[in-house]
Image (tube, rainbow, N blue to C red):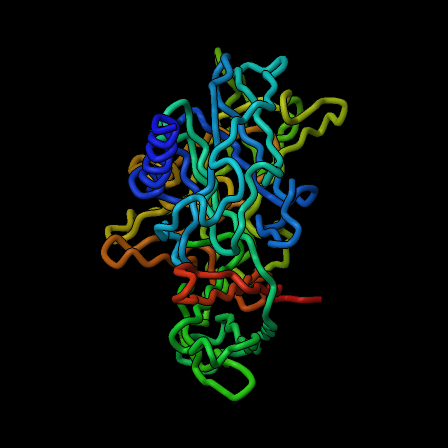
Length: 424
């Protein structure tokens, strides 16, 4: 009996250490062999991975590839986070009912592709490993040891218990911020609002499309009324409108895809070279439908299975820019680069050709993307110098409401609301 108790204590220790020491970044691929990670509500590929606390079983679909010819032995677990996406220190038994980790056993090998890969799929949460509280979660996929992390992805569990109303005026409250900017005005109410001291214990996050680099986190109300909280006349809720996302389609290598200069095959993989993109801040707005920066894996030949018969290609991007920017770096932004601004999405400047370049290894499909400039000193990102800034741009804004109950020592997600800037 003592030995069993010791084993349980050791497992609990390592479980807590996992959250505190190993999980560093959200939405990050820790291994170069990890590709095409997709996490979405089951049956809704283009929706955000948000599920309801009262209806969770198999509500999320995870898909990803590992570029290898042999299937690795993989597990997954959850880490509960605060509203800032930092692990909050809860013990796993405080937010998971059942097992604290599970195996990933559903996989298939690629078929007739030049690059070998193993395609994994998993629906979760499962009955034997169910989140028990609302809030932000990191899904962590790892190998045989907890510190052998393959990747992390965000998902959210909401306990809908609030009323959120969002509107978007034509102009921001302060025209000095720019008349082409998009402003988000919010009104919120929820039960026991004033018993919870909303100015101190409530937090609002605003996310534009799938971006986290420009998300507003921890927003406080501008005004507190007897029946609601009001978030207006605050420059933090005014966003750069930007422009519609650019796109590429690599679903068929036999015909030259849209925007493609050349398609050819090297010894081990295809190479797709795109025509150079140019700056769009000096042209008028053109209405183009996009998928808000997301991606969709499919093949034009519909008798093939894109999950295991879609091939990988090196796709060469280029942005014409005659003068190297001394104070800014340029990145490719979107689900195509996991919405991260890091070395995997950062472009290099080619002084001979006068352009920024980047090559990405992508599975066949449809991809939105955007170029973004990041100030090297402040870390602030901007779309305007490259893409322009047009109020007519159709963006998707999601508002999340978190409440912190000191007695429960974690941030609850009690509501969210999504609005299109050009709702029709």
